[in-house]
Amino acid sequence: MTTTIGIKYNDGVILAADRQVSSENFVASRYGEKIYQLDKKIGVTIAGLVADAINLVERLQAEFKLYFFNKNRPISIEAASQLASKIFYEMFRGGRPFLTQILMGGFSDDNKPKLYVIDPSGGKIEEEFISTGSGSQIAYGTLENGYKKGLTENYAIKLSLEAINASVIRNPYTGGKPEIAIISKNGFKKLNEKELKTIIEEVNSHVS
Image (cartoon, rainbow, N blue to C red):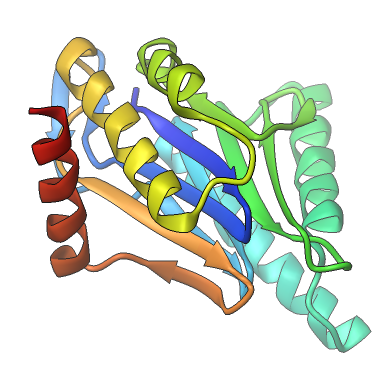
């Protein structure tokens, strides 16, 4: 139970999530990690059963390292998302599906940003912006109103925060501090506490 956001902007992908970890009505932690780096220019968000999600993340990280050693180049986002889709599908058909849904962002072989959502059955869809988790319906209201083609990095970050904030207010299973990662041509980067605080203050001042 969470809210995760993916937004494609003109030069990359923004991934955002709340950090609350909950099970039904119990809040286990407000400082969980829901965004992970899989490769130099590939990141993922997780929503669903944490144990399954971490198992999948670790498996993908290992597979991408093997790909680099065998091919002597990083895996593209198209190949990475396809591999993740196959893993999901194999588990699903085997009767033990991963009870998690992921957003995966990164760069294609021709250096273009791409964003995918992959569900427990292995279904894969490419989108401009996506939200998953229990607060996704609320987040989509903000994303639909604010998204437009050719977003700047700064605008996309602020839009993702606004969507997370809306979910925190209206969805009881979304809470805690947000976390945000930027996937650009320079690689994967998570915003630190100071950077997040500055942007949150800007968003709050705009809303007020």
